[in-house]
Length: 349
Image (tube, rainbow, N blue to C red):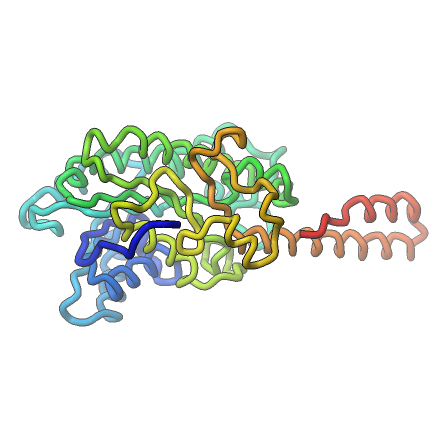
């Protein structure tokens, strides 16, 4: 990244789906408030959880910190309009001022009760996925960020440095999915929603500045596999590591990027891969969100998630090996099983 130091201090930030102290949105709120003196507006679907979150965040900050909350169901247009009305009121959280930063953090992995067995709430077997499953997830992960953003544009237009952050994932990369075992873990609905959100980000970045401010920045964040309730705390990254990319994009200076997907405080995967030895510099992982032939909109893949997928490949291969040995001990199909185990050994990253 070539952008200069962050220009944002004392900004007003609204984060959707940010009421869980054990999740990334709440942590990003704390970092923005504690490091940049930002005024924070938390949001969630239930009033009790919103009030509890506001109380919890205030307890972590100095008494002078500005923390408020609004009840917002991102899938309900009436709820969205109610929040806009409240924010626009001179007595509301903005006190008649602008909204500087919108972080579209609310999202789901699979419809409630539909996730498969295991540790991750995004996994739903491909062959069991219904059209309604697709509608439910894409409504929250794609349509809702569009609806919330459009409704809040007038308030963002009042800011001198408006910033929009859509929370995406490296799983939204077509090249990432085609090249790693992760594409076969059953997260089709979630992955597809993030691919769509990547395109939404690019289109918003290209079109919304003319309706707000020329220096509007619209980017997406890939926080990586963070230890949260979303994955039953199986992630390897800390909340602070995941939230750091939110903060980076929320506080971009005017010479910072737009229509990009960032991770690791904005380092792109080509830099991260050199640092961590995950891929050769010319591996081609730096891709456009739509086509690897059009490099204009760089997709910054999550090096940590790539590393974890590599580890998952080995774990799966080890499991297949154990299964094969057990089968052999029972006098099963030794030759065929062993051959399949060999075929499933992953490439070295």
